[in-house]
Length: 422
Image (cartoon, rainbow, N blue to C red; front, side):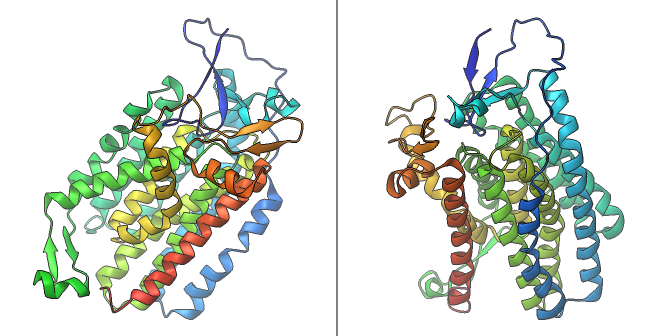
């Protein structure tokens, strides 16, 4: 039986070698396969401390209306339940995907005993399903039949569900990366068709004197921008990958920043419609953060499951619709600054200008357990080339710290430009 290496745009989202089961009779389940390692509760406990600033802003710093705070807390409670359901279901789902030969070997541990362990693949499907169940059930507590936001809320869920399905199809069929670029465009159609919000942009104040208008209606161009944003967010997470915990970790960092941003905007605004837009974002980002933390407890180094393209597509599309419907797409792009840099570094190879190898991962030395950066255009290799050889866990922490710095830079930028830029 031949093995083939999987690609995510030009590199694996999970650093795996995946079994090729095409034209092969179905094998009986191997009952000798050991169960996956338990979740890393210590990691979750440390990360739970990050909720303290959020609770401080929600309860003490900003005078948020009791009814809105109640809805946010209900959503948070349901999201917390989703966290524990995700942790409980992942070991069960991992057995089923292994029975269907959806497993891989970790390339970054090749040559070590861990490199020979079968790791269940595509466990992002669990996160996607739990997220959708939580988001759908939440409608019972917050939206009425005549709610103005209900149509867009369900359109957003349709996009996320569609993208999760396409991601799982990609994991199973191993779709070429050029086709991957089109998948988010298809999944974004429900939102683009149902979107009834404004299509205008506010002209930056320094340019008003030159242009002569303060508000510019882009019309269909704005919807085109929405579609392109969905394509970028989805694929940017997909190609900034290849390390245990990197895909889920960057999602957790960005989702946390989005959550803080939404609370700050709600607390600082007096416009009910503006507050509702950011509350809408909170109702989606809290379940995303909670379920992603559940997956991270298994995917953090050393990973006992792989997330697959299912998760990267799901997470990217979810954050895209959150930014679009929350009307803070510019802020979202600054949160995605590392992904933008990774895309720019990757562009010469992705466009074919420079030869692109089958995999663009760093080189692993089984003797030392360290990774060495190659000349391939990825942020992972760029960091390794400049910081020197690092362990997989260490370089992942560096990259996630850079992600957090980019999010903090966005908050500082908004603070200094407030009142001058817009």
